[in-house]
Length: 424
Ligand SMILES: [Zn+2]
Image (cartoon, rainbow, N blue to C red):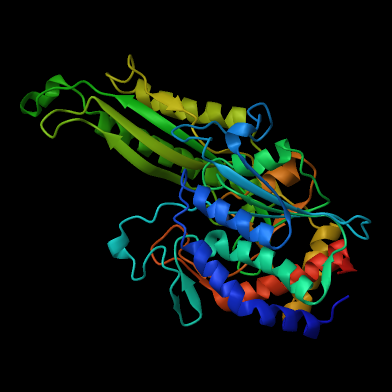
């Protein structure tokens, strides 16, 4: 085993290079559908390390039949590049590992509301700014440079390690699912999402759906002869908000989520509709995200949403005979909790303790991560542990560089505890 001093020394030796790498990675505007150049750059960087690289696109992989698959609209899977690097040990001395991170990022919004360039990777007072800097390109840099640190110290992992950079984490999770469909397996999956150096053992389920609502167009001067699809949609939003309040009451009996205030969040996130300011809108489309009540099968939960929407529509004289359509067009994600007591979690905790002198705290996420695929469907224990930062999905997202270094240290130490080491 490498000592604390040896690990710190190796991480420090590569630190400037790691920050530069993270800055470059943050510079790619890898929003949905635009991840290719980012992934190709990563694949090149992995090949430079001598790792064997599997680069493929999602349309190469049959996975619509697999549990956890989410239906997709409006995106081209011919362009959805995934990267898996394999570092194989001819004679394994420990347990195998998947290190996984997503490189897709959410849109930046109006960039004049940023005080830094959204993809500039500016560093101010130890914080690196940019969309995706925190969520989760920082974590991706930590998993890559943890392996670099071991190499600098003269070692490779003692068992097989797969380094995966995926897309679609922010919309479906199908990138993670594709790695499993392609056959990659290990004894554990570590995902360095930005958990603030906490053990991210669980996450709520999430569902996306689109409401497609009709209206009757009329000249505004005689608007009582028509209906307004935008205002009708607003009434459906109110019904879903009430449903969300009810769900937050029901979740109070859940063993893990009862301790959180309002873990079920509903978000009408994107809206379009209407054709003309002086015509009542004949159509409206609303993209929604809602958390799934933990423990509820997805089929049953979809039915509950349908019931809420159709009950509200039935009370409207126009929508009753012209009901809205509900389209499942993204996340259909189950919840997942890694129960305490695994050898995997113990090894992560030991590495955190060694780096910080403190016991790691637990963290439950009221959003979604890719860990559900490994832990829930493939029996590969999975947890999240990674850096600290702020304003994920907001303006001026940043990561604290000290926490990136800490995460790198914890991952490197965890790898030697979990996989063992072999001298180069
Ligand atoms: Zn993330």
